[in-house]
Structures are given as structure tokens and as C-alpha cells.
Length: 251
Length: 270
Picture 1: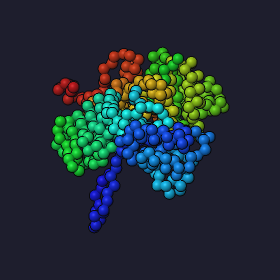
Picture 2: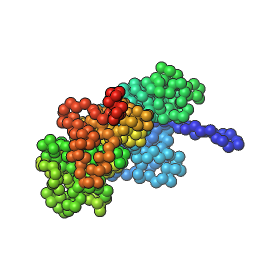
Picture 3: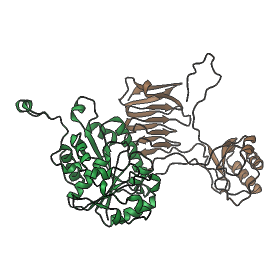
Picture 4: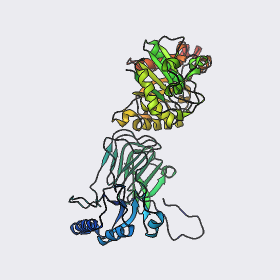
């Protein structure tokens, strides 16, 4: 989150919260030659996709009995196919110091916090499997997956729509959080937090029938309730990003 | 097969135990065989409110640990026919409760009773989660006050995601019970109105129980307030039970009552 620094000198950097879509290379088995040739085939078919694409290598599906592939070899094979491995997920066997010396980030063991129970399951990041025969569409730009919720989002619940818009046909309660890579439309009062464009999409907007939010944010730029006490408070409103400023207007 | 009702709230001190006792007693008065189960291990007070604290020998944890049978632990209410109480343990803590243990006790109770009323502890942690896990119906007790409403909203979220029914793709039937309602303070803008709470929680309203001195009197006497038929709270609970059983009853005690000479001269307001 952005924050104003009250110190005497201006810092040369700023941390900004952002949520980017990353592809995972899910290893199902390890055979150096087979991996090299399969990745090579995928790269040849989709050169634009593989151009230095950052990937997280997911080790969750690797059978425990399988001997551990030498990490530097694994990275070399990925780089030969113009993949840019930036970290590991589901790693329980590689030594932490080794990973750190090879510049690999730890993406943990997978899983998220409490998710909203809904008929349609939460969408996981699209994996680019190491050894499958699928004719893959470029998966970096996922198709728009708009999610529609019809029940109120209760306090303490968190909903994240990856690669699409979120539509809530009810209220978002105080203490609830709704996030989307796209726009957020709430056909009811917004009393909790709404964060649109979490993947960096600065064109995302938030719409609600009564602006009573604890916090709204677009692409990481946020305003808390205190700063939203304008003419649009508790009225139908929309919010969008104007440069680095979050603006609101009546709907 | 019994219907399992959980009386829960999130927030503490809003009237769960008072309401559990009232609802359980009310259902039994209507001829349904009912058992009240206290899930507040370590801080039990259902037995005090029901006036049977001197007859507690075995409790829910004893039954789960097979230290006693259900028949040994169940306490028969002396005033109301068909009403039984299964008290909580006071010396153990919530870790003594397990999902399997609770399931087994509830299954056994299901064959003996028409209604099982589970009095939940406050909070959203293990004790409260176990109380609601097997429920068919939930009565969410809320005071017309911001933090209670916020906590009730939270517990509704927990009901929708952490219950057995939710795991199987179904849902628990939710009812709102607004307690400690004071129309004078609502009119003065000091308290949330029924409409305000309904707007935020968006679940069907079972009843509004007015703030009443009768409640404190009843709990100190160890008598469920519903047996004090002169009191407004007692009557409001009886209305709520009637609505629960499918009857149509108008909500009473929502308006400021003017007493004495003024009401005779100017007529009752509202």
C-alpha cells in the first residue's frame, strides 16, 4: 500500500501492493531428457508465450519416492526453453539455502485463507503442465471470468475473482472483503472493503448502490472510509483511478 | 428424527442462553419432546437459568468420553413435561469436545426427542463451531446495537461455510431473533431499529424480544422467562415460538407505550 513518508528526505522507492497472475509449471514427474524435449515442443508451438515468461515451479505433484532432481539442472532446462523460473511452490525437500543461493523465492505450500463457499469453485491460476499433450491457448491472458454472487457477502468472508469482474446482487457487509482483477459491481450497499484491478489493471472501476465502504482500492491505490466522506457517501456511486488519484462520482 | 436448532450469536451476552431456555420450554409446552444441550464447556449457565444446577451429576463431556450414559446425564425438568437438559462440564475446557463425540450424542438424542436446542457459547472458535456444525436451523440472537450486528453477520458467514449442511452443498435455515429491544431508545435514535438490523443481516425475522426486568428476575429464580406469562418478554418469546412452528403472529412490543392519563386523553400512539 502506498504511504506518505514524513521524514526529511524523499525515499528513492515506494512499496506498492500488487497481485499479478503467475503461471505455475506443475512437475508431475522428472526425467531430464523428456522434460527438455517436451518443454522445447511447447516453446516451439507458442513462442510468444514462452518468451521469458516468469513461472513458479510447483513440486506438489512430484511423487515422494522419486529422487530429487538436481535443482540447478532443472532451472537450466527451464531457461533453455525461455522460461524464467522465479520460485518454488510446494517445496519440502530442497534446502532453503540452496534455493536462496539460486535466487528462488519460496511461494509456500499453496492454499489460501477462508474462501467464500459458492456453487462455482474459486478459480486457481492456470497451470502450464510439464508433460501433457493439450494444445494450450496462451494462458497468460485468461478469458474474462465474471463471477456473480446472489447472497450477501458476510463479515469476515473474502472473495477474489481472478481474471474477471465481480458482480454482487446483494450487500457486502462491514468486515467483508471483495477483490477482483476486473471491475466490481455491487447491486446493494458496500459496507466492507472492495479492491478492484488487483492485478495492476488501472482501468478497473467499482460501482455500488450505496457507498459506505471501509476501504476502496483500484490497482493498489486506496482510500479509507475517512476520505470517502464526500457528497457521494451513502449514495449510488462509482470509483475510478485518475492517474494516481481515486475519484468518486454519483451513479 | 429430531430437528437440531442452534441458538448462536457471535457476540457474548446478547441473550443466547435466555433464549435457548425460553425456546426449549416453549416448544415443550406445545407438546414437543425437547432437549436443551449446553455447549459452553467451562462456562456453563444453562443449568442455572433452568434452575436444575443442584441436580447436575453427569454432563455432555462425560457422555462423550463414555464415563456416563445419556440417560444418566439427562436432567428432567420439574416444571414442564417433555423437557430435558444436558448440561455442559464446568471443570473441563472446549478441547474435550470432538466432532465424532458430538455427532454420536446428537444421533442418540435424535431418536429420543422432537427438537434438540443447542445453546452455543459466544465467539466463532471451536465451541461455537461444534454447536452449529450439525444444525438444521439457526436462531441468530442479536441486540439492536452495532457490534452485536457485526458479530451476527460474522456468525452467519460461519454458518454458511463451516456447517455439515454447507459442506454437503445445502444450507441451514436462518432466523433472526432481536433481543433487548427498547422502542424508546430507538425513537431517540440511540438504538438500531428493527428495519436497520433486518437491512444489514437480511435474514427472516423470528421475533423481537423487548428489554425486560422479567428476564433478570427469571434467571435469578432459575425459571425460564417464558413461564412468566404476565411479562412482555415471556409473551414475546411465546409469539416467536408460534412463528417458528408456522403460525402467523404480529410483532408486538415494537412501539413506545404511553401509560396513564395521557394515553386516555390523547389515545395510544402508533
